[in-house]
Image: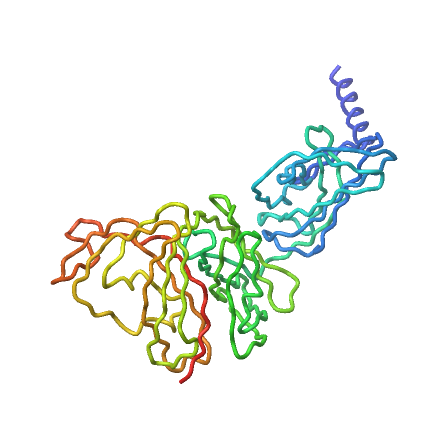
Amino acid sequence: MKRLRFLMGFTLCCLCLSLGFAAPTKGEIKPSSDAKAQPFAVTIGVAETQIKAGKPFDVNLRIVNVSQKTQTFRAMTCSWPEHWKSSNYHVTGAGTTCRKNSLETITLKSGEAYEKTLSMSVDKVESPKPIAFRMGFTPFSSKTTYWSNVAVLQTATPTLAVMVLPTQMQVNIGEPFYVDLRVVNISKTPQSFRAMSCSWPQHWKSNNSRIVSTDLWPCMENFGKTIELQPGQAYEKRISMVVSDVNSPKTVAFKMGFTSLGSHATLWSNEVTLEVKEKTLAVMISVKNKTIRAGEPFDVSLHVVNVSQTPQSFYDMTCSWPGYWRSSNPKVDRPGLEVCYGNYGYTMTLKPGESYERTLSMSVPKGSGNTQIFKMGFSPSATSPRYKRFGNDMIDQPASTGSTAYEPSKITHWSNALVLQIRD
């Protein structure tokens, strides 16, 4: 009896192998084959087959009606990536964001195609080299998945990594904010790339159309230069960005991509999520003459306007109010401390459309070049400060041990940019 069971099991095992049943490869989903004629054919294409683990790359997706009749299917307008899945667990979608998502019906005549582009990436852990995958498309409310052709990628060990760090995590719509950018050599050998000396912001781009650069680069000479980085060294820059869409959600996420001079590959940074607030105050600055002499003070007119629909209040000082202002350019700054008698705080309230105006003395030191560009940032206190008496003045410090001094606003309202011509 035991010998008979053994022979039956051995025969069944051989039969299964002869029919082609095999366990799927580790890390891969084996697409099922359907003998029935399917109305849709799915094809995929990858522009760059040489990719780096952890870095997004684009996959072109195409659904073609291969039947002789008009065919329809339904898909989401914004979250359409959820209809797609990869056959390989190492290759995953990078996701997408949107404000409005609805269900739509796609109608394709015979031979017509529905096309999309999906951002994907290969994980950094134990990714095989090379790596093959297919993409499966499942229409809304359908149980059928249409699998594509096989695409093969060659993965390479990354040599450079891009990191982004905003100077503030809360921003106002339309108000510029600064982002620190770093390109780090994470390899064990020296690396080099080329970038423009002055118009370097052109090498950077955001993956979110709502977040754009506001940087200008006035300069006398602009040329390509070679950046050499030893292992662990970084190329660092600061760029001005702004959330431009007035209908932006409460939070917005973005990455920064760096494309060196002459390269077709873009290195993408980590993702950063910002808290977006409705714009309440707009700051505008002006000067009587944009041509100034180095080392001599010049006046900058400051205007803070309430652009919201409700009254806005903030705290100010009668004398030391310049402490709430800062320049975006360290070479365009205040020449010294203000001298005054009787310094105290008060509440400033602006009705919609009203403005707060001041004049601040600034200067540019000698040897600063022929051109300087700057903005002015206004960071008022949103809470009542605690003051300490100093003679006839009140200074914004803790009143006693254990008390809490006021905290400046976490949001800086940045002005327009001004370009100054410097004469020595």
